Length: 270
Image (tube, rainbow, N blue to C red; front, side, top):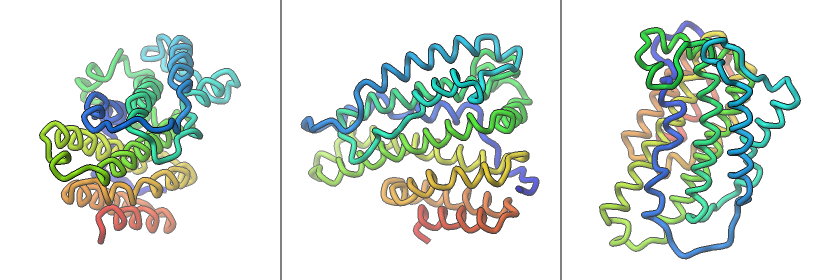
């Protein structure tokens, strides 16, 4: 269980918007083509499955009724969108744009679950609602199985993006890495990584989620932690470290406390 914890709340826009940060700037770091590592057909399949899912979810922002993974048809759609078995590093830079598009595609499903029953047709409209945070938190709990899959998917894709950037930077000459467009691209990807991971940590502290659900998120968090430690700026690493420590403090389960504290120490280097 988690104690009442007002310090953290999942920002409704950041959970989905973080996936898009850096999508348009990846090309500034591109190098010579290399052999593909990810399945090029997965993007089209995910986009088609997402469109079918959103058709099933039509009107859910008003009715609150969402397709659930307990339905075999819905489970197959979610399996298609959230499948990351082909995402094994290092990913080439030529693959980062379609991989980021897969992340954005998956975020459309996560957004639909967040908007269910809120009366808001999109995230900008929801952000104007003074009860937005409470409504999103209720939906995270109500649709915990599907939201868990979405958050794990985001972390795995973001981790692959970070690893690819690190590999690319390691092979670049200092003068190339210092170019303004390269620096701007790296900064955008760093910010996207920070917001994606921070949103997941914030979500762990939502009251009403089970400790089993929280523990299920730990492997994806642990996998991305050493990559963030090498990629984020010191202030960003410190921010995530403080957030993880605060989230750990909100937990009553000793294992969750230890794991979140360990994540923070790995990222922050303390």
